[in-house]
Image (cartoon, rainbow, N blue to C red; front, side, top):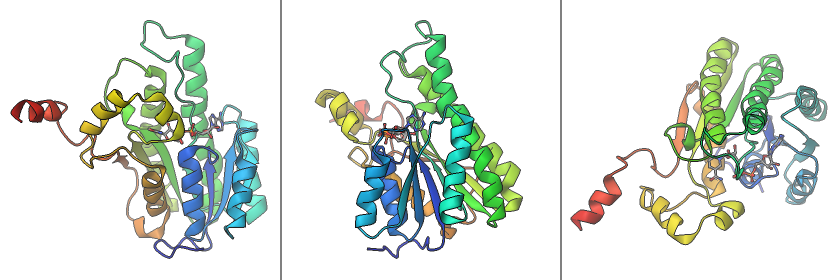
Length: 268
Ligand SMILES: NC(=O)c1ccc[n+]([C@@H]2O[C@H](COP(=O)([O-])OP(=O)(O)OC[C@H]3O[C@@H](n4cnc5c(N)ncnc54)[C@H](O)[C@@H]3O)[C@@H](O)[C@H]2O)c1
């Protein structure tokens, strides 16, 4: 069934990490809006099965292997999209190395862990842009959406490598937008807040969930669909005048003073 709210007919989208929780929801939404979609993910990540399920819903979705740590693999994924559908208009850089228990504070940081996270998240995202941009220019332009994280906006006591890699993606977004805007390529980043994916549900004990929820002006944690909606908007021509920006999609987590919930509780 096709959704008419955003018209992506004729467009081809490639989504890295498309077998993951947010990626899966986004692939489905992009295809429902008329795009032909390539899910690119690590071998064994279930991309083929997800693409098959979406094709059963009469959506046009294919899958290919991708390891962001390898430039040859990145090139092959872009080539797969071009070979399969003949063009590339939308790139959703959604894959990430995340949730590593050893990614803690700086003093305990393993240099190897740091290098691996940077290689996949920052360098991998750059390589995807590097190989997608010429294809987009050949197609008359395109839209790149980099999935960043609110962790890149404020300091914390853990996830240092992950958060810094997302900070690199924020800066990369502005550079790509600046370098290829005249050739019709837009680039935006989403600063995603806590989304209730299955691993997040398992990892987040109820008291911690309550603390996060108290900071969500929208009154709840996110759902993968919340991110998919914004990706589809930024992928569509309705956002033609929007580029080079980092958009918080986080239920208002970073829109208020950190002290507000506690002060409200004291006032009550
Ligand atoms: N879930 C959240 O609360 C949250 C919050 C902030 C940001 N984000 C961001 O949203 C995006 C999607 O996250 P998610 O929660 O759906 O996670 P997820 O783990 O379900 O999906 C991530 C996907 O990336 C893939 N991946 C990992 N390493 C890869 C590599 N080297 N090459 C190719 N693919 C690789 C994984 O196989 C997986 O399918 C990520 O960029 C993440 O940082 C998520």
